[in-house]
Length: 574
Image 1 (cartoon, one colour):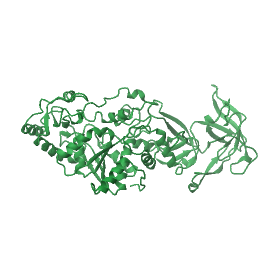
Image 2: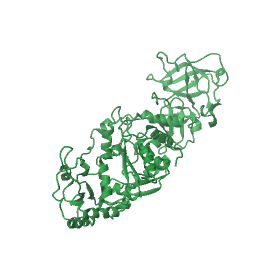
Image 3: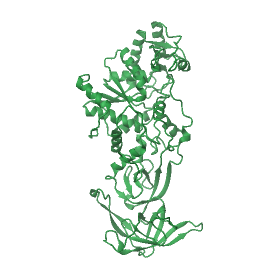
Image 4: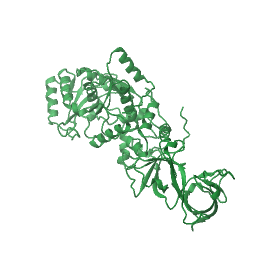
């Protein structure tokens, strides 16, 4: 596990400190409980850092538990992806569990609830149950099956387990209070029938516990002391406590809620992220436009940058939206001393230096990272033909344009002054080549002081250049299209259980908010030193930003590079 320790305090940490001082807890046990129905995103990274680092700071333990109670939506692909993401972030769990490990215990505790008169089998449909739950202003209505005898309920529940009934034909509900002001306590469904293959238990079960029932029992069995979850579960806490108490669990965990992470121009709902994948708008869960851990990794983010970001945003109980530029700040800070600095031409324009000897190639010395001398130097070729960025030439320059234009002189980074003498165009009038002259007295590092130029541009020598595909990314959501934090929270909760009701339905207009120009592909060139670049190698390209060699599509024959982040930002970190 990462050895860095967070230093800032927060309300949850203060609770832990008080619990240890008072003797209420002798040790700290936290858990991270993802449902394997999708890949983790940056919001989950906040929860991961909080749980693992909190336990580590106080000498405790953190369990990883997959809350796999819904076989229809879950898959081993997601399990493996989540395991990989957590390890990549730098964390190691103390124990690995699945909610399905406790299915027998869940069943036995449900039988106990029936025996105590605290649960009953209901024949109503999901729609009927939703309609009778009531509203915030009106109490719910008792099910006509609420007063079944203990014996009948035990018999029906056993027959549910034995597979006698069809999906949706019956459910098991907790018997609490249909008039409770907290809708979550109005006889919530705790078991439903699903004749579906489970990724862990196969076809052993055809009834599955609901999350709100299974989750607190899993925490109790594992000895979790501080059950940390996002704020949308605050209204579920009374049900959490009820399940632990009425199921007579030996250990009593305590739930604490914090505000989930929301980022501008970013989708923070697994359900919506899956919709992007299913619609083919993105190239899978690891598309660099996705805010998933896998997507950020493929884009070029480092675990250090993500951990530092999560620490700095802090832990509060107030909904808020973090500017995406704040996350970008941390990857720039992490890479500025790590990434070698080199030159790449993304939109190439050919330049012929007419007074440079034909057939001659000289090798120029360049630092790999001026801010980190330990990264050493490299040799870059220079010859009669080079490529520059098309945007670094303007035939009719605007005021204060100091790059290349007819008659103007600029410095080539690490090389010489060149002057544009002639512009070559095709039949359509497009500029296809520049013819320039160079001044051999102006070699970089020579100490030349004869005259000054205002512009410095980057370039790549043509005969040794390595072709590359550059993928440039913009936010996947249009500006201002992200949901409000409380809406994202409701969406994450929506559809998780079909009997809860009151959650947000699927947003049919969501795909209309997608930025269809979020990916631009350019074909250009990089320095020859990158010809053997490997997956996840990171570079800072002069003036363009930080880039990462794509681990999925890049090959020795076809170099593919993803832009992680632009070089500069107007964002000010306070």
